[in-house]
Image 1 (cartoon, rainbow, N blue to C red):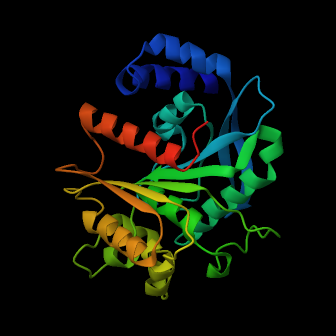
Image 2 (image 1 turned 30 degrees about the vertical axis):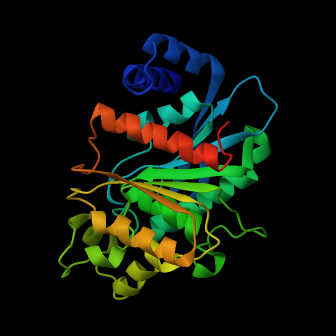
Length: 295
């Protein structure tokens, strides 16, 4: 059933995103990938946190791997509802790990950050089993998933979010692709001009909410030795302010870090046109190729 859902999903998307025959592409996916759904990477808040793995068949070589984190304002969404977002990476030949995490109704901030950091460590621990090339890991996501991709790839070990899944080695990612993600959580808190209900719900009424918001804001973790970061953001986004993308990349530039910002003129919070989607697809491929990360 899980594989059938994947085939239906990529069949719907293929003709739009890849310019080829969608039925042929769907058949190729089913023959080239094995799906391992609902693998537990962590238990927290009395619930198992799970990933779905899409691994290439018929190869003994470790593959570059995309870790995808879904959006939903930290309080909604699911990995299952986001399966279409991983289809382009399957078409490129990546292994994919699709991550679920604790939502705000289960655990307030910074639980989602902690979970995604643990998912990265799970990928490292299971690299041999599923053929993940840990030297070529790309973490990506949309909206809140973009934020969690940034925190997963940017936060240093001493930031204090790894206590639930300690390891001797510090996992590293090779690149981050941030789709209109939040970069300044404090900017969205209650009482601020850009306050958003999803951020208020995620932080809740914790007394140290402002401190937590600052600690999980990517703009406060910019340094020179970060992995390359590509951000895609529409400049008319009413859900996550475009200014978040601008400030992040201004700081990356100032620090001498590698970053690219693709602005979609007039673009909102996703919902891009076919031409804009084609542009993002080309930009992502060029970005990954430049950094030696394409399969």
